[in-house]
Length: 350
Image (cartoon, rainbow, N blue to C red; front, side):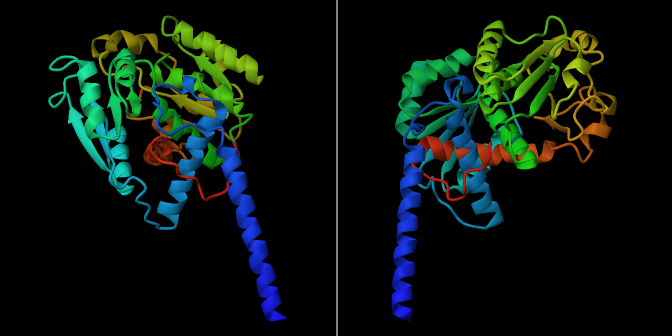
């Protein structure tokens, strides 16, 4: 009798595993992420972006919480090209890629001068023969596009003047962890119409999130990005508000977000920019207009004129969780682009 029970349980367990495997395979069948470039989130649909986040959450759970060793990138190497300095992008990528068993190679402008000592075309082909992927933090989006055109390996945008997709993935993972779901939330951007905002605009509606944007006159986001974002919002039935009034943008928002007002390469504009952004500092007065469950995000490094200490160091601030998630999301991206890995944890609610 005991033997029969064990046999029945074993058969049921086997059927359950096969069903789960078939379901998992089916749910991934339309996802084609391996081998692709990540230059902008505009080129990825909702399910593909959600898959990046799912893999990221899975790796975080298995490695950080369970202490598992997952050498998923063993034997693989990554070229890291940095025209712009960075704390979080460099550390998250180097430590994350190495934690997965891979070998990251850090290259500054002293090591590799894109398009100067060697053409971009030649650089792309050389790196394709020596590494498995490239993460490039550059000034010009066009440089990334040319690298992607000429390379036979995935090219990942570590930041350009136009977009910062890997930062936004970390933001979304942070928001999902805090609220348990992204759909229906309202993000309020108060600041410059820059690369970080562009990446939010091209992806928020795909999760069913509303977006409020406040920028000073003359600092609005790119018009082509705005047109695309409005179309995404229309298709998803979400609300997109654009204003020059920070308080209007903060009204009813769940997530208050800002960034530097003076990006690298804009230092000579600092005095004028600080004057133009008067009234844009996020304070508790700003937060009073937000939803009762409001939180605050900033991709760092932060300046006091952008957000005061009371908000930045408050329990409502998720900035350091957000910074850590830069590591888990870049790991999720690299694993998704370089392997056929399937997450073990149940798919989060998005």
